[in-house]
Length: 67
Image 1 (cartoon, one colour):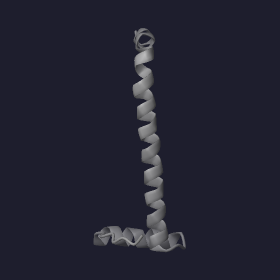
Image 2 (tube, rainbow, N blue to C red; image 1 turned 90 degrees about the vertical axis):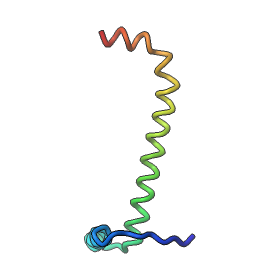
Image 3 (cartoon, rainbow, N blue to C red; image 1 turned 120 degrees about the vertical axis):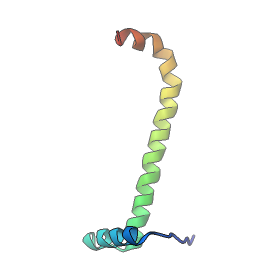
Image 4 (cartoon, one colour; image 1 turned 180 degrees about the vertical axis):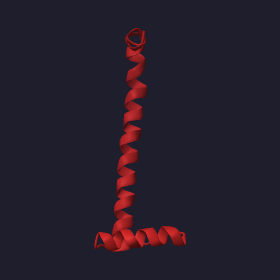
């Protein structure tokens, strides 16, 4: 799927420098950054869900450990 991504001049220049350093295209660098962000955010959301479900089960024990 095609998409238009509008960047500031500074963002474009930073992306260009990173791509040159890595000998990759700007598109490859941007796509990897998006994949990394989505993966990281997904992991954080999953951890939040697990903690929301499990912390209440151990609230009393956690409270005692905090004393």
